Structure formats: structure tokens, C-alpha cells
Length: 249
Length: 300
Image (cartoon, rainbow over all chains, first blue to last red; front, side, top):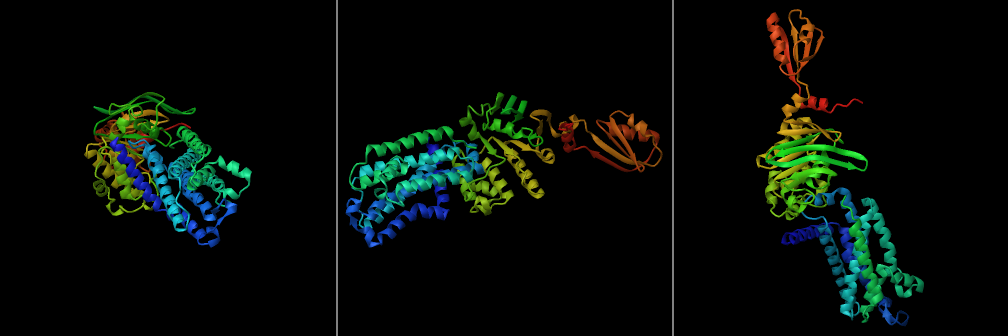
């Protein structure tokens, strides 16, 4: 038991170092969301509240979107490309020849990714404070929404990683999942401004549900059960399917 | 005591039968070779011993354990070098050893292995920047980092140049001298001849011969060739009639006698009785190479 903990910790350390050695991914995961928020925040008009936005400012709308960005990037894009490349290179096979179960790699990677996403969210929240966006007023709801969103994104990413046949396919399918999810998160067209139908569809995507739940708690409401249940359902169903389907070689 | 006991092992991938009734044992402390042409089933056989594959039928015991069912007990005690595997591209040599050391309950000191395998200068080199030989040495070091009782080395020297191969052989001897039982998968006969105490030849999923390299040569029926130039006329038919002689060839006054067993003594005896002096005497003992070709020879 103790030994397993030691192994996972070492794995997580190594993977974190490898992650930081890839400057592009590190930049987009850690710096990009807060930088985008700051850039938007430098435009005075976007800092002004507007009755069209239910009394919020544009950057207030964008804060939860950017809080979800890193989870989306690492879960939907990062996990499938990393794991499918590891499978193709035989990294997973090499690991499965050691005494630890290769599943421990998930135990190292997922918490590490969630950790990186957490840092990114903290940066967005703090950056928001500097730009006049108040702290999330329902912290408990915010935390719950974030945890469920993380579980949902990571599970969907693992599910994609479990069925893609090659590293190339892992990259492609990861990107194919990432961009629509970005759309439903509202990064190009915030959800409050998009047509009602799209908004409804978005409610049942992991990214749409995550942004809505985070936004609600930011504004002081406890997130809707429907949104939280949507995220939990993705986490359980995709996670369960991934556990069944995942191949080590 | 046998460290590995394989009996009646069968394995099929779909309709293709890869192993048919394979049995062999490996004793503690020896270097055991599994050799055979590509596709003979060597890798599948060792993977069944490592617990990476489940046999369709038959029994496999490694250190008295079932490699699949008792994997959690067996894995910490064996070291595996896989034929085709890479590490994370940006993972540095030192990090790789530290990582794999953390996966074993009683690992060896990574520093020690780095020195032992000539990797001390590459501690900070990422895996993707290593040469073929360096990668191979790293994989051997990783196979040994858990301080195993048995090490499985699969096609260890395939990517190496002749010097690199010789160096690696020296290292394998060193592993054995440390008391580790080594199972070596190879399709190089010289390697098996140089390293193995015993070997089994696999062909088409079956063991066609097993024993010490010398026994394999003897069993293959290919003994050697004796060549000379007689200074007086010699009837080749009398040579061909000698016990053990399988072929006699005469070309430009030079005679080549091929045979098994004590055929060379018979030939020299005949020459002595006849008082025939010979020049240019050459004896070539058939090597494991010849034996291997004889054992795995297929009629198309």
C-alpha cells in the first residue's frame, strides 16, 4: 500500500516534469486562460456591466468559460493524445511489465492534470479579482461544480484514449472533441448570447454544463441539479466505459 | 532447482497456432537461450513466462508461481526487457531509472546501475536523444533495477553494431555472475554459443531441440569438415566408406571430407595406414550456426 503510494507519487512527479518540458501545452494550460482574461479586461467596455447581460460585465461572463478551458484542454485533448502516444510507443506495455498495475498511471496523470487545471482556475479567479470580477459568491457550489467538471472531462478524455487506435488518431479525435466542447463552453459566443436552442443543447454537454454551474455559483446561486447531474453522468458513464475498453497495447 | 518450468504450453492468436506443446525448464543461475527464426514463437513463449500473456493451455511456473494468477507476487522478483518498447520521449535517463526503481519494492540503487551500464554520462539525456546502444543499455538497467532473480532479455543485441554486441555479451555474463538467472531470446547463433549454458531451438511453435550449445551441434548431425591435399593418389570411395563420413568432395586435388562423430580420427587413421602424407590440412568444426540451419531447415 505504502509502496503503491510511493510509486504513484513518483509517476506523478515524472509526468509533471514531462508536462512542463512541453512549453506549448504548459503555456496554454497554465498561462493562456488568465492572459486572455487580462487582455479582455484591459478593454474598458468589457469591464462595464450591462442590463443585456443580466447586470454582468463581459469579462464576468468569460471568467467561468476560461476557468473551464484548462480542464477541457487537458481532459479532452491532452489525455487522449498522451495516452495513445504512450500506447503506440510501448510506454504502457513497458510499465505493465513492472510490478505496478499500469492503471496507476491514471492515478498519477489525472490528479496531476486536475492539479494543473486547479492552478489555472485559481489564476483566473485571482486575475478576475484584479479586474473587478468578484470572487465566486457560492464557494461550496463552485468547488462542487469544478470537481464534477474535472471528473467529467477526464472521464471523457480517458474514454477517447481507450478506443483510438494510434497516436495520430488520438490527436485527431481529441481535437475533434475539444473544439465543439469549446464552442459549447461559450468561448466564441458566450452562452447568454447564443440562441436558446443551442443553449439548451449546450446544457447537456460537459462543457456547457460546467460553465453554467460555475457561473451560477460565481453569481451566488447554488448550481442547478440538472447541470451537476449531467456532469456526474458523464463522469460515471464515460469513466466506466473507459475502464472496460481501455487497452494497454 | 528449476526456476522456470514450462510444460505443454499452447497459444494461438485467432486461428494462428503460435506455440504447440512447448516444454522446457530453466535452472537457477544459468543463461538459457530461446532461439529460432523470426515468427517461431520465441517472444510469445517468454511473454507467457513473464505473465504478459495467458497461455491457452499447459502450465507455466516461474519461481514456483503462476505468472498470470500470481503476477503481483512474481513481478517484483523478475526483470523484463521488452523487444519493442520505448519510454516517454522527454524522460531523462536518470529519471527513468528513478521512476522504475520506485515501482519495485526492493530496488537497486539507480546510481549504481548507471555506473554499471555506462550511462552515468547520460543522466540528463532524454530518451529520444539516446543512441540505439544507449537505449538498449538503459532497458537492461531497467530490467535489473528491481534486483530480480530472473531476467528476461528479448532480442537484446538486434539494434547494435558488432562491438556493441560484444560489449553487451560481457554485460550479460556479468548479470549471470551476480547470480541472476537469465533467459535470452535471440536469433543470433553466435550469441547463444557465446553466452548460453543451455538453449532450446523453437521452430514453427515447437521445440525442435534443446541442450547445451555443444549438444545442439551434435544432435543436429552436422559434425565438421576435414580438408587436405594428399601427396599420393587416394581413392575417395574408401574415404566415403569410413564410419561417420557423410560426404566426400574432390576438387583440384583437394579433398573435403564431411562427417559426424569420430570421422576425423577414421580419416587420419586411413591416411596413416596408407602412408599418405597430406598438406594444407584444415579442420572446421560445424558451429551452432550450421546446427541451427539444419534444425530449422524447411523444405519449401
